Amino acid sequence: LFFALRPSNILTNVGKIINPLFLAFLAVLVVMCFVKPMGSVSSAAPTGEYVAHPFFRGFLEGYNTMDALASLAFGIIIINAVRNLGVKEPKNIAKSTALAGVGCAVLMAVIYLALVVAGAQSRGIFEVQPDGGSLLNKLASHYFGGVGGVFLALMITLACLKTAIGLVTACAETFGEMFPNKLSYKAWAVVFTLISFTFANFGLVKIIAYSVPVLMFLYPLTIVIILVSLIGGLFNYHSTVYRWSIGFTMVPALFDGIKSLPPATVSALHLEGFIKSVGGFLPLSDIGMDWVVPAVVGFVVGLVLYALKSDKGQSAA
Image 1 (tube, helix red, strand yellow):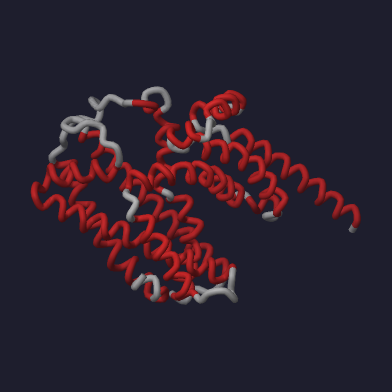
Image 2 (cartoon, helix red, strand yellow):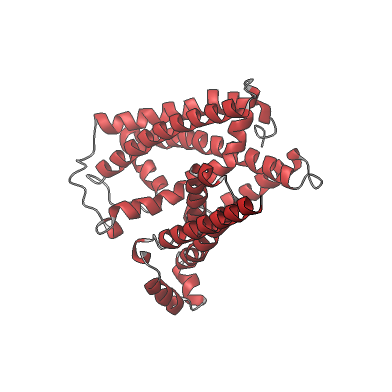
């Protein structure tokens, strides 16, 4: 909250101080994993769904990073930061934002690849862990002994702090613009900080259990919005294409969210039959990609309707 209440300094606080410190801590841990590997990556046998569908299982697990979802919120922060650097022209802002995005994507890909390798190597000593936090704790304790917990605490604090600052700032600015006559930016920042503080005390396991259904619902919509926007110039970013694409995607996305509810919740709501019948109807449901075909159909329908509207408009002119 302290940093979020000073949004004009976010570039310095996060970009020049917190994030570099986090990367330094992470680099130390990753280098140790490569210098003194716990085992061979090739000897780590896949488990669960990684046996039959490793790519798609990994793709779905990527939802948990919330990178694509957060990018829609963080965009406003990046644009404001670029403006504060003196870039005013819309085209130059877009260019600077795109360059920053590509650079971040490459760096994040390297970081994730390094973590994947480190995690696979850990199978030489440890069993499969329930979540990434537990595995990082094992790695830190293995390489740094008694101070491993302190090292990991500092690293994760820096990692989560920069994300929390960005999310609180983005949400406060977004809701401040959506509801200009309700609360001020500072008031929204306080509200979202208190909400986040409350949920944080539920524990990582519970947060993951109940956030996964939300992510399974939101992520297909997010991916479709991003992909359609990338080629939006072909149809002048007309809302018709967006509406049909998102409309068709929303149905299987909602089903994915219901399917991902905790088993106890599914049983209590007697949703087993519903999940089985709908899953058998939607193509690619067995690999979690049941939203792909409806999204493509909706996009095509939207393009056709847009083309028809454009033809009518030209004829009338």
